[in-house]
Image (tube, rainbow, N blue to C red; front, side, top):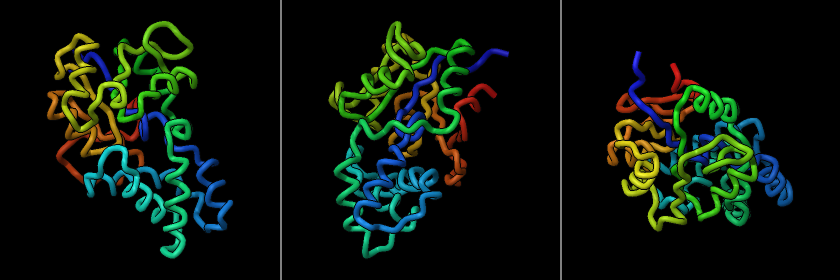
Length: 225
């Protein structure tokens, strides 16, 4: 059977990596803030759902941290301090903890003959981080080969702007409808990619999204089903 797409565009945060749990825990520990470490995994996706509801600016983590701190059980009186301290560390380098199964998923997509790309809201450093952590890179290198890394910090506009996705499509030399974009946000990823003419999949490993208006995946290998 013919596959209905030729390439996969990947979001980075929430699909490949999340903020390092050890770093976040250390910040909270340093200030005597109580939390539930077991809730960190789902906490990112709860936080992203909050950003979707608020339609927050892509690089403003106010709503993200409100959702994350609620999810991990930080008490309301401690949240203001926790919010300020975590804001100070929530930068590109701390987004380095692999999402479970993501490395195997990226390798499986590449092995299946799919072309890969990255479309990420970041600060111009995501390509360097992905190469150094041996995820993927454009051209030869230690990770899987990608056609392009589209970083909002480089191109000057951010998802859900359809131009972000068009940069990726142009680099792949494919029409948008032959590309599937996978991201952990309905607003930035699903709606943005759909507006650009791509197929879209909401990465939702904890099954938090109840919408029936778009497709979901709990793991990258689900795209091969």
